[in-house]
Picture (spheres, rainbow, N blue to C red):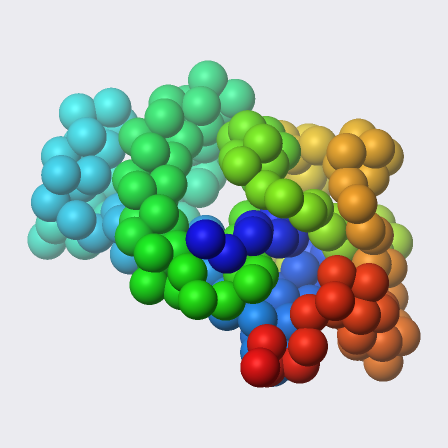
Length: 198
C-alpha cells in the first residue's frame, strides 16, 4: 500500500499550490476539502446536515455553503458537529481512492485540518505549509471575496503554525513560489521519490 504524505497548512498558506507541485511531479493527490464538497452532496450526508442544522440552509435541496460557513466558523460546537458528519464519509472515500492508487510508493493527502481532525495519525510523513499571516489574510480576502474579520475568525478555529510544525517532518515556507517549488523537489529527493514515481 502507498505511504501517505499528509499535507496541511493554515488558511491562505497556499497548501493547494504546493500539493499541485507534488502532483505535477507524479505524486497522486487527494484534496480532502474538494472531496468533502462532493461527499456533502450525497443523499445520506444531506439528510444528516438537515437534521443537525435545519432545512433553511438548503434552497431546492442545494446546500448554501456560505450560510453554513458563517454558522460553523463562529461556533466551535457547530463546527465539531459538521466535522462529525463529514469526516467519516471523507475517510471512507479516501480509503477507496487509496486502493486505486496502491501501486504508487507515496500519495498526497491534502487537508486544511489534518491535525484538528486527528487524520495526521494515519500519515507516514507530514508536510506543513506556512506563510506570513498578513500574506495569508490578503490571499483569502482576494480569493474568497471575504472580509479580514471573517478570515481571522476562521484562523482562530485552526491550529497555529507553531503547533503544526512541532508535529511535522517537513515545513515549506510558501512566501516565494519559486523557492517553495524547490523545497518540494528537495522533499522528493529525501523521501527517494523519483519524479513520476517510475
